[in-house]
Length: 379
View 1 (cartoon, rainbow, N blue to C red):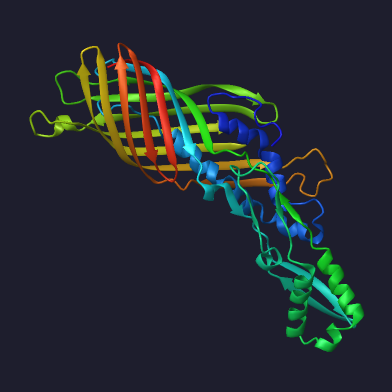
View 2 (tube, rainbow, N blue to C red):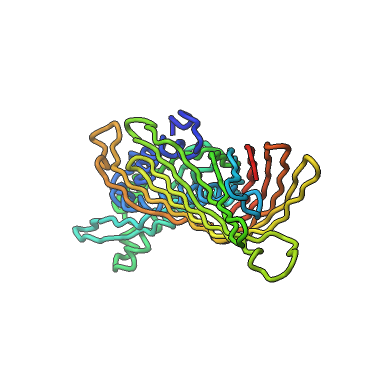
């Protein structure tokens, strides 16, 4: 995570993720480099710990991108347009700043009086306190301490007793010494620090144009978001981003004269790729309602929406740390995550003076999202 604020393009947090993801995955895979025999077991927990660490980002990223698509429920007239920038901030809930590090069960072979026994320690009991920072958590390394040595020795003894070893044998000094040595070798694990974010910021350019057909009830518009493809770094690769969608007015089809409010249905899709590292897809479907008023030179409006959204991120990379002797060097990581965002509602308002339009909105989804828009608008 050392190169976090290397660049601040339109999609700020994605660059943060891309800059620090590889060392994060490596650390999530096996914790401390002194994890001994537990290391191979922890490697199998890579996906679960990566999921716990990054899931709040996947959700927040989708919530932010799915915001700001409209500032009026009324589509533009034919060739009317908006051109501006939308800025979003996702409030990070306290519960999304931590997660429980996943530790697998750990088997150990123990020889007593020339007899071999296999004992298995339950990961959750071996490491009772596993709460560590998520990507939005505190900027400090997560430390996962094992249980007290005496408690681990007791775990060994209980399993050995269940396998027929007598308490008298367990009390022998050489057996106790062996158990204490094994207990002392259980490592302290470490997970990567968070970013310390209270809010996740994002900013995207956006344009919309009216496709309404005069003398017909068809009033529609299309909207688009786009970033030119460019290379972040040779290690990470190129970033590309495209979003598009549109809405269709429903109120012209309602057989009530002078229907008092504007109603539209909208659908929007966005796709982002970051080299071979990740691919993100966000979808939003909503019903928009609102009312625009012309007050001499000032135009004002209120708007709201309810909708369904979905976010998915696919991760794919090969772990290649600076040390080629790292036991995880060359490990392939492939998994995908769905955000926890699904239902959302939005309330907002806008003010337009001449062609300058400013809007603000509040959205509640899995998190709270605040959106501010500014740009040129000819409706």
